[in-house]
Length: 283
Image (cartoon, rainbow, N blue to C red):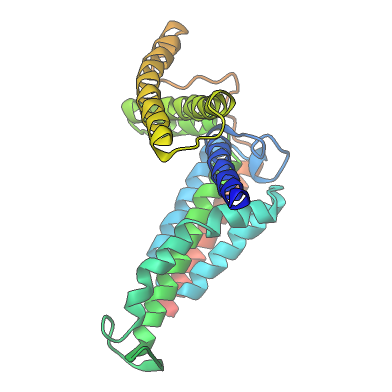
């Protein structure tokens, strides 16, 4: 009994610490953006514009094959940008695309999407018929979501957050939005670190909670304490940024400079998008 309880407690502990580590890695980690890869060497402005063009293309196309080819191109770019394949696939296929797959499962069946039957089955006294329109629509939806997420993730992995914020201002995004995103990036990392420290403090001071009532009191007290500390910390972070001269405009020591390579890349991106659109019209 005690071994099972210890395993359950260790599983919860590992889950909490892993979630916090993932949050910290996803918000401010720039390990891959600092690598010497293909996308990292491009001008952030033109790179962002090209990825926006890819994203619009993926959303507009109505062929799963063409969208899948765009995903394959994105995968090749990740390899040339020195992004680990396993890390890229986990980031792009494990969460949102998998969730979207469960969302569209009901549309596979004839009750929701009538049409030509592809296959049928009988389970627990229920007859299920998967139709061709439902299957095609579900595949198109999932492939489109996976490609769109992959493009956004690849752009964020190969571009520093400060540069992305600067590009948003160059593209005319309102200053208030950029300021909010910038605050979120800085605050989320501090928040994750604070929760991790609180969890470690509880474990070192309380140890093993022997009664569920005691455990509920500990959790409730720490939730209230975390809420108060996060509210205070958000104010302190904002005041610290203001005291250091932050006005909402991202400032970089690096000056954006587009080279011939960047313009060639942008032209290639436009040609690829135009070719996919043209191919989509033929199909």
